[in-house]
Image (cartoon, rainbow, N blue to C red; front, side, top):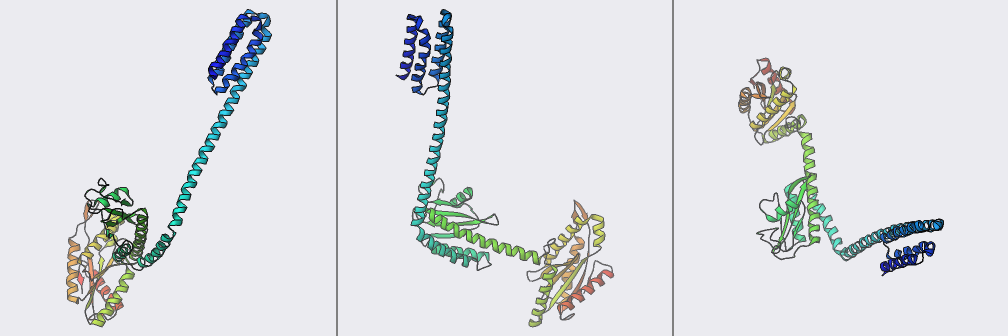
Length: 430
């Protein structure tokens, strides 16, 4: 009706001008009423159309009555100013409405956030008792899991903790997913998986042998380290709170395993040579002291083999230091292959190695040294695809026939090693 009214009023004014041309100077300003009326529709097109039509009518009147030109021009200018002011006002109004709408949307978002926070705090208030018990259990678990330096014991204690927390669940810790559908789902998701009822989630865990279950991946040093799995024959036995609790315990166990690995790594760096991965000189001295004391108490023999690479400097000069490093690594591997679990292989320093042989008399140690020498002499030490050759000289000493202290047995073995070098190299002296 607003649209028809504004256009009807404009049509009436046009008919009035046709019937009474002398009223044209009053009709053009009256078109402003049509503009104001059309503005009630909040439509940007109608005022433009009416302004254009009024301009056409004014142009016709100016052509028919040139004597009224100033009056008609003034009325038309006023009409245009009215149309412009009306458009500017409408644009400001639309801008204000958009700003108001954005504020409303922002307030609605804040209301939703406040409602969510309020719901969370209500839930927190309801579960404060449960959380208090959880904190106590976490404290006890932290003491238990951090009280051992054995990785297997950590897993055993984690199973015990979770079994006490969830007495009706079957708790296991496994190293890999295998063919287990629940663990495979956790592996794909890279996070905890909750199955409330396996009958309704058969597409996730096909062929499951449980009705409800939880799988939590464990990471140690940012590497996959297995899974914690809880199963129950009762549907709905686990919920988000149970998943969160189990995840906390699993995370604590993972931290304990990380501490163990860090300790082992630091200990290994302190007791092993970084190039050959054999025991270091310091670890060798400590172990030799222990073995000499043990042999003295138990009246059992002990042998020591000192080994040195022949012409190692010439080898480095000829093939380069990288080839020399590769040679030392290969020699360390050969030496380790001759060592029993109770033996102790070490890099004594530079190109010199040592092998402690508990419960070996000197003749047995000489036999082992000869086999090592022969193996080294036969080994094609390949570097960059080209075979090279190297030999070793070896000296053997035994406790208590050659020495009665750790320093003495090292000195005797070292003297025999240099005797082998001065005697032509690539030989064993015992």
